[in-house]
Length: 274
Ligand code: HPA
Image 1 (cartoon, helix red, strand yellow):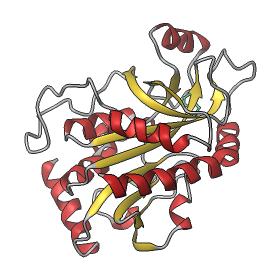
Image 2 (image 1 turned 90 degrees about the vertical axis):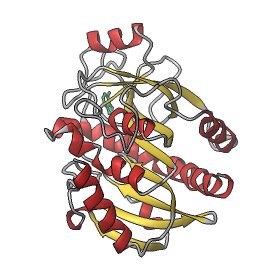
Image 3 (image 1 turned 90 degrees about the horizontal axis):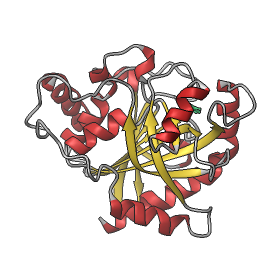
């Protein structure tokens, strides 16, 4: 696996002419097309990058581009593969391991999620402050890659406090700042009402099918992580209506501008100050 990571990061270094990259962002539903608002220094299709999986889910384009925010460069990963697509967990987190190998210090992850907390409404942006792994898997299982991080990584501060404070500051005047705990389910089914109730009882505010594997791997590698959920629906049983992917996409599209405006400011600040 380490060989695969090296192969991919060497390819990217060459393709990007050794451009120094300060931050990376992995875009989930609702952030698709974000990269097209900016002048790209470089742009690559996932299908041209060795060992990358081309995402198959609508709203995920599968493109890696470099864009300048502030004085430094951000790598925008538009689209991600999900565990529910049936891939090996190691292939899901390969882009994150490559981010680590490239020496990128900050990772921002976005996703669409179901709202469990009664404080959330569809369209809310929630800053993830911690997570609960309910997927029955962990991307660090198997032989540890000592070059990337320790065998038994501490998970006390997966979601960097300074970045959460920065998010709070930047949200001021744009939307009401909310934070919460994200529970990772494998999907592809949405949760049952009983599962949502269970998640609520054990402390989750959000349920979703991504982000946690990437956050674990980034934390292992000592990267500062910030993650944001776009609440596209109230979770099953809290919502009176059955859930549908179309509804998720519709709400994601409606809230796109709010999230994208925030993210442009957030990335600019990170690249100026850290
Ligand atoms: N559950 C899991 N994942 C999701 C949801 C949900 O309710 N909404 C958007 N992604």
